[in-house]
Image (cartoon, rainbow, N blue to C red; front, side, top):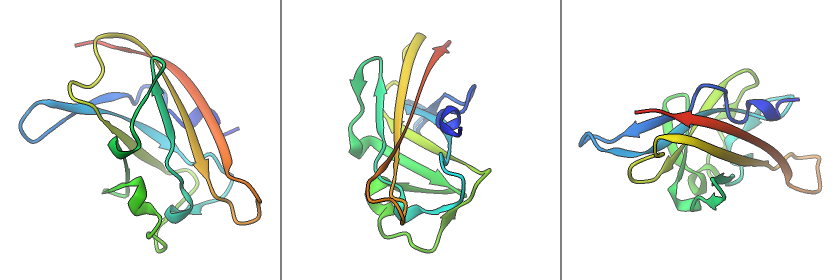
Length: 131
């Protein structure tokens, strides 16, 4: 039900660094769960672009204006990702996405208190990047 919002349509864009160079790309994402969830319950997602897995250390989550690595989220127990709000996942990749069509697949993984397993939520979207 919420999986199609893991990669919000029309939200993929370049991320420009302070020096003016393209430092990566980002997309908006919605929590694929019917209730809010603490950020500490969000695991490192799998992000695959055109068949190539992006490195965990190159992924960031921005929620309510604060950017964190996914490793840092484990210690964030006082911020709740609320239903109907979007966060941004940034992938640090020099040059961002090349012009043209790309397939982006995301597996957003959550630890839900009453589930004895990690909830895996997948979305794949084809996007076109133009200069």
